Length: 113
Image 1 (cartoon, one colour):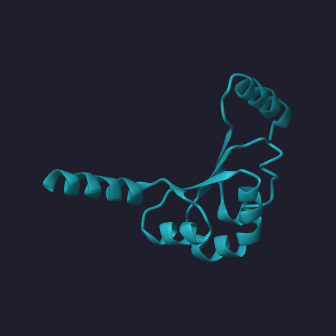
Image 2: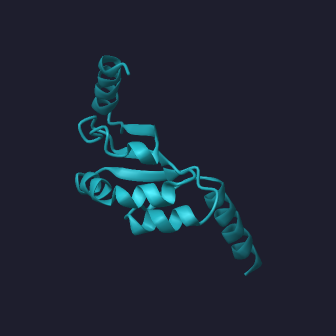
């Protein structure tokens, strides 16, 4: 909403070697904002009810931004369906309780073996 302030902060962050991440993108709004023009490296899409139908319809837009170097994070995953949809779209970074549970299970399994 305050693009001038965002641009000033983003330029300062990038001048110091930082990366820009855009948070709180909803499946319905993917592609409404040119994230590459904002010089974002990461963009976090919030998984929610209906995303399994909405995100695949944005496949071309997601692929275009990925080809331009944007890394999508699919966040707020509470079950494995989001992982499957994300992987089908070329998304490889995930976040949420489902991921926490999978990592905890893997850690426990490693301790047992």
